[in-house]
Amino acid sequence: MEILTLEQAAKLLAEKNNILVLMHKSPDGDAIGSAYGLCKALQSLGKNAVPLCGDEIPRDYSYITESFSFQEFEPEFIVSVDLASTSLLSGKAAEYAEKIDLCIDHHGSNTGYASFGFVDGKSASCAEIIKDILELMKVKFTREIANAVFTGICTDTGCFKYSSVTPRTHRIAADLIEYGAESGMICRLMFDSKSRSRLAMEKMVLDTLKYDADGAIAFVCLTLDIMQRSGALPGDTEGVASIPRQIEGVKIGVTLKEKENGECRFSVRTSDDIDASEICKKFGGGGHHAAAGCSIYGEIAEAKEKMLAACREALEEKI
Image (cartoon, rainbow, N blue to C red; front, top):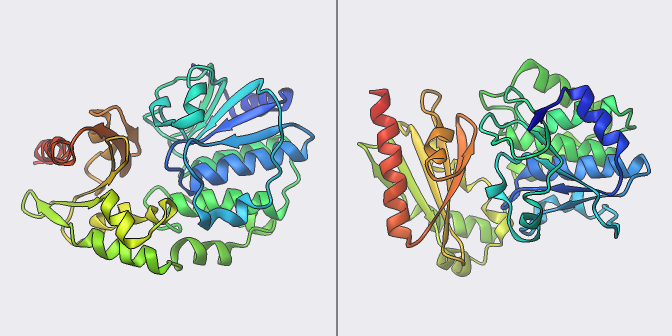
């Protein structure tokens, strides 16, 4: 992958048309906000641009997606946002895994899969990078664009409470609010609003809580049975990964999500002295120092034991 400057990435986008923007599977607020914000901005410049994700976009993000105008065209330029590895693509998006022209990302574990890339591991979210690129492209920020980009920042920083947050993060957020981002509405919707089915699902997930390594590891499972019995939708699962790490004394919090194709998706959250991305790299995943993910295929019990072994090893290396 040829590494570009921010200015070069903006110039490359400005020169292209018929742009397809890819998101990772189980899309979170940063992927959604970055992709939709970028596409809305590109459309405002008169370009054809649409986002694509192999999984359903959660209903909580309808304030971003419902106003989007989809266009029919043959993609000529493929962009990925918030995507550390093409292994995180699914469905139709995975068909473009070997065709990505430009990667815009903030994961230090990025595998360098695109022809060109701008990767800034110091950015708290990919949306921070998107905001800078759009300004370099002289985009006029509408409320819809500002809302999308602000969503990416606030969700990937845990409403600005994670250690990845910098003074620059707050300055960018302030700029977006000045551009019209509805920060209060977005933060309430993302962090203070839950459906009854989601609460039922979280209660059942907590019933699966197990400790390991004298309480340093907390492990929960979100099975297909729990999803069915609770009535929760796929979008209701966002935020569940934070639950085990919130427990006092826990250094590694692990959430296993069972998928229908035999895939066990793991979300790993760690304390500052343990690298979550190094744990997930062992299974082809990646992410950030304190938050990462990966997939293991097979029986839940076997996949769980493999992940626990990797977590125990990570703990032992710090002793």
